[in-house]
Image (cartoon, rainbow, N blue to C red; front, side):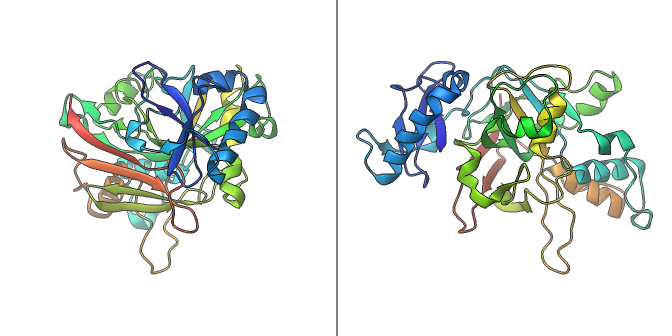
Length: 339
């Protein structure tokens, strides 16, 4: 099923069920007022939401209305926990190679073995996520504004010490993410040894979150095997494949998070920015899901990056299409503005 949260003037919005084709919706207030309330009692609430979803798809829901993504908050407007990983190590390899000035003939700079053995996860701010059509409000262009197209999972309660197999069974919903980074603030923060804070502002999520079964065969091995498109100022920056080159799947990310703690229902785990190795063999390359990757490739090839980061007025659109070319989650579509 597909779920959304609609603006109603409150912090947590109102839960709605959305039709599979994203054309109609139905309020779920008679079942659960918010998505967090549904997650808190998922075993009891989910079958009721699924029944309403089936009625909506058959055209039998009595109070259906046109679905407007612009009315959506993030599916979960605030979460008890938000952690983001770097599941595509290719991006880290490129950034490391660009930083150390490796020449193309030298190959990618090797990553420490620890990064290949265990996922890299960082905690982020989960108190106020952005809706898919909310502006990205920032004070300065000079901060190095970058988009980051990726996928995130919302989990049920996951016990401490859960195995990847156990974590897999606790994934309740999936959604697209735009994990904005302020690249020019990152070096100073990292040099202090405490990780990201100011350089990772609010993340935006797709209008709709869906249960993994909605993806059919595209959900396998704890990965989403579908194309992900990022369009910057009307030009396609990347047409990537989210299931390819993913070094750590969602169950592995979640199990790593729960090594020394439990994750409460409604925790969100992001896989980071999608990054594909170029194995197109003469076809158009997959492109990039963030500007930093493009700049890294420019640095490796030419010694310096030429592509600027985002400016006020720039737009970013992130969407995932099914095999028929139809949107699965609805699109994230944001404009960067001075705030």
